[in-house]
Length: 402
Image (cartoon, rainbow, N blue to C red):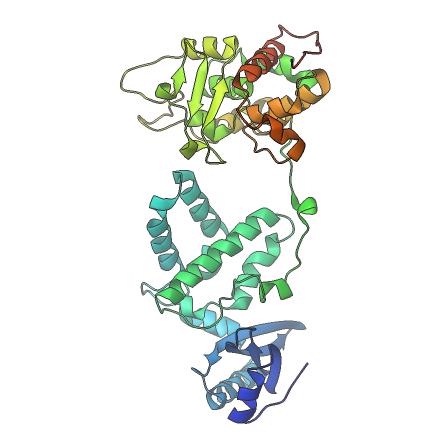
């Protein structure tokens, strides 16, 4: 509800009323539930509404905010100068160390030791480089406001919602870090609750989950036969990934000291697992044979090394191979293929398959199995899966879980 206030006394009264309050033509005071208040200039260009932040109250007084708003409105009306564009153009000239990109780089380096993998840092850098840096990378962190954030998020909010959500969180974290260093003040324009949730739609999880496209399990033996004709390291890695039903990163990061070939067991440490829990993988005879066929040297700890010494196979290597063989499929999708095969072609208990996939127990009925990781039962399952993958189990038998 619009409220006109012209005195400091009236402004102080508004601090008890969370919401947006009209103070003067185009000038509003946004009051949060905490009592914190921020000035905003609202204006229209080409029929579209915009909002420019003007600092917090009382750091910026009523008189200062009113005068600044009047000057900006006059420049817009008389000279066609968009307040946001003028602000961005001015800040883009900065070469100081307080740019969004500089603060983001500092934050990533500070947080890197606490992240469980280099991949996490890479994801931060990739999303910010792709979406945020082109728009606000060279701006001083004190100049970034809601319209900047919305301009970044809106184009991908629906089509790439998971990416947009993580991007928003990362922008928010960078701006929070800037505020902690006293490089900016006022409300964080990337904050969701009480701010962007009023400007962007909350997309239900059921509508935004994107499933990885998977190969139907009936077509897998033919695909595996084709894959075995390829002798590249990426083809071997993809075979191993399918036989073990693990994730891409778990294969590319596999080390020889994690694997006991004689015991047919692969122990993946918690630090490399999505659930941050140690995971034992029962290796089928086919998986062991594949591992024994790989070249091995004392100075190379990685099972699937990349092109550079000491570096693992790229996360994209298997996907690029798959794109050439079956465009549209994903490596992760083979985990769904495995799960569908268990449900539709066998009578192994579903909980055994969930343990093989390293999924957490979420069903109270299944909790009775949670006393162990069901390794011996999983041995039977993974051998049956490998037999099917390699053609030894083309005629599907319903396998007893007992």
